[in-house]
Length: 201
Length: 349
Image (cartoon, rainbow over all chains, first blue to last red; front, top):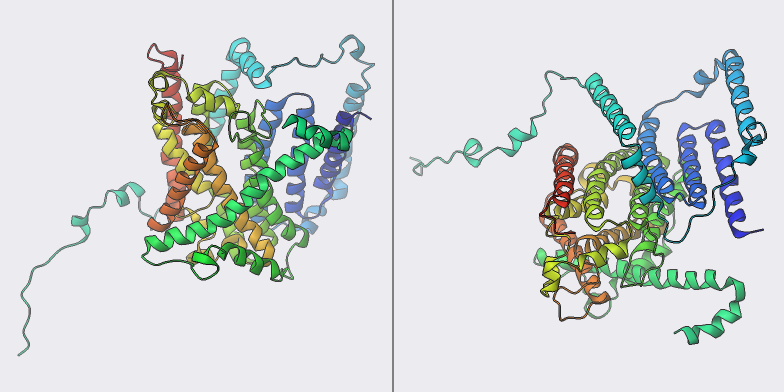
């Protein structure tokens, strides 16, 4: 077996196991950590495809930022597992339907013969000096610059909307604006009083 | 060197590349661990002298064996696992803390060509690996099943995610002007330009055109490593020792090692990205690893200096500095650098 194949199966086995544990782990924090492991192994598999920019960005964005915030929320929730499991049987038909549909789609894609994948062979290995980052940057900022900028604008609007929806000004809090704190001068706080020593008589 | 290694390579046969890489890893990690041990001593000495006292001076000549005594003490202590804790994760926490801080050293160039993995996406790799450091703290805090560690890990999660953003923008400026993600290329690109031709290399390094980014990067680096004055994660007065409360012995020592290894990592990265790496500051002096070591030591001294000088930030002030000061500053500077590069005044053509 070639070393690359071994690495692929090594990463893939761990990834499938971790993905299974995400949905079977009883503890939500454990599930979130298994999801981190899944992302990490997916990044490894992308590295095997010479897509180092995508692989590292996956780890950086999902593992480094998204899942940290996810954990942040999950850790603080007091999740009652029995309450969640209550509706299991009533939701099962809907869930099973979605699951079977996804299974059929995946079989069709992976089966390949339905889509004539033989006509589209795997791309040849990239040559020496190929930089995935440079290629992606070139495509994103030349050929697809308008769709790319549009997508970033949509994201920005979503972000602003999320902030606007949750922003609230509470009254009666004791916090002081930082700008006022920084602007404090000695004269505003300390008063030097000159007075004669008092004598006791 | 090649002829010397030839018989050894033949002895190992096909396993030779793996063995040789392992040997290189040991050659990086072993000096790093010694540096970490002596950084703890240096810290206590520096802070001691800044507070007009002597610091440790009892173990060995001038206290030079103090770190070894500390290490032996921690090794011999019992590791206590709290009864209500999540055992697997409790053990995993310190490992998750130290693993990224060692893995990041794979792409650090120590001299021209002297690097374990000269990958094209080196800077990206560093960003990804350092962004995983927070998991050690979070997992440790949660698995301890105790209030103070939990509060500490909450603080760590929020703080490290916030400062990563400004750090990332500072790095974007660096890779804009060096047009490469490869750390060796970033260093060599700093040795070119008008000042470098005049023999004043230190003026052509990135710190001068990117001065605001350099400052932001160093301060964010201090915040990322949870060092004073940003050490609210383990602030003694508020959350005792944060995520480390329930840890003892070697498990605690691993957190300690990770923190100091991270300090050295951030310092060496600052030297590589902004201070010209192994390049010599003046034209007629030879380049070499000693310059990188000197620059790293200087940045490390700033870490210790800051700890001895500043009182701890309040938590909301830390968040304000990260989100309301650093991110706008870095965003504007990314824009300024991009415009500067495209204008006729560009110094990087």
